[in-house]
Amino acid sequence: MLVLRKLDMAYAVALATAACLGSLAAYAAPAHAQAAEPGRVILTSDAVIERIEVDASGKEQILLKKPSEVAVTPGDRVVFTLSYKNQGTLPATGFRATNPMPGPVQFISVVEEWAEMSVDGGKSWGKLANLTVKAKAADGTTDVTRAAAVQDVTHVRWVFPSAIPPGGEGTLSYRGVVK
Image 1 (cartoon, helix red, strand yellow):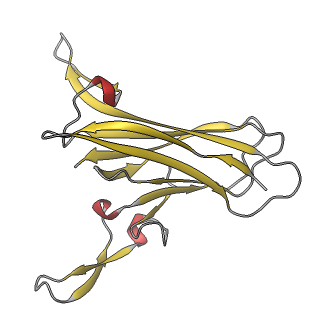
Image 2 (cartoon, one colour; image 1 turned 60 degrees about the vertical axis):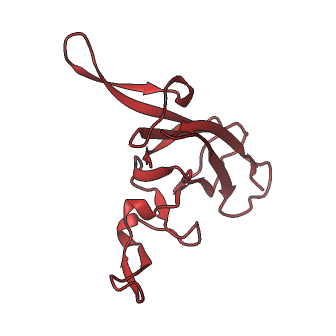
């Protein structure tokens, strides 16, 4: 059995009218049980606010700030990073890492092309281009099926295609915007 530790990182999101706290929850699970000594994969989460500032020479710079260092407002871009490390002595096979989208943040994009998205609260998964959602038609009474869009994403998931070797580590990342 793969031993995992769930780490949640609380981050502050202040909206224009009130301070609003959310949580970035990162959790992981093996795709299937593993016999013998387990790999032990540790996940940590981080979120930073991306700001564009102009320096003294007039050149734009992208700065990454902790949410506690700035007043976060709607429209701010957020970069979420999951760091993982196999601290076990065996490869961690069938590893998955999942992040629900924090309520005050809308999904924009994911860095890893092999990541999957969910638009139904984590019940089904796939590439965003292949997902659909049910919505009300213009008349407000009829349900129609439409292509899913970034605003529909409820979760991001990475299913590792190969084992994470002992001592293996890396990062996963996705972006969002404060609603």
